[in-house]
Length: 248
Image 1 (cartoon, one colour):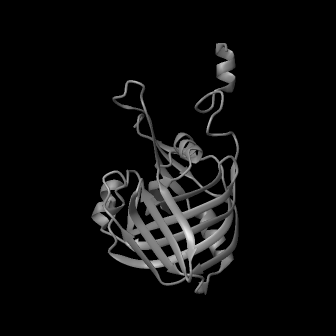
Image 2 (cartoon, rainbow, N blue to C red):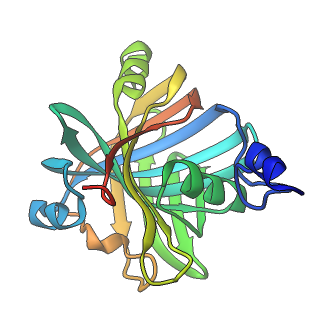
């Protein structure tokens, strides 16, 4: 393989069979269980990177099931999002994510900078309850519950909120010297082609448990605000760099 061939074909790791592809990632019947809760705003200010601004003390804990994702197959995910603002526009900062599939972990980190680690999240119906769980190795670190399809939400309003709310990410790739970062950027992306098949709310609860390597309790639950269950088709295209910490 000569230099020109490498320049033409290199995109992701490994070069002969990269985990990240040159596609817009389409996810059909993606299922979300989102519990919004209040935490300590001073803690949020310590973990949210400038130039993002913390606008509230609200965190969203998400359990997700992706049964049909282009390039990734079927996998589950859980994580925490923080409400922020950038240049007067409100969005969500991805604080932590846990997945059970290597391909979306690698691609999510390499392309956008999603803060993904391997774990074992689940989302299922437990009799009359929507149940989300997160295990790190053999240890339970989060349990979320909600009454199943108690109250229907407006599908169009849910679609518009999902499509118009930016996601902010701190993309970091280490230098080969093993001592510093090679890339350190603030990234913004949106989901597109949103089609909501159903959206519901109901009584919700969330328990978080201490773990040294999955520190979800870093953002402790002080008060539950709401629970939302959404089933939707979405597309995740590429994002954009809005701030480069290496050049600041």
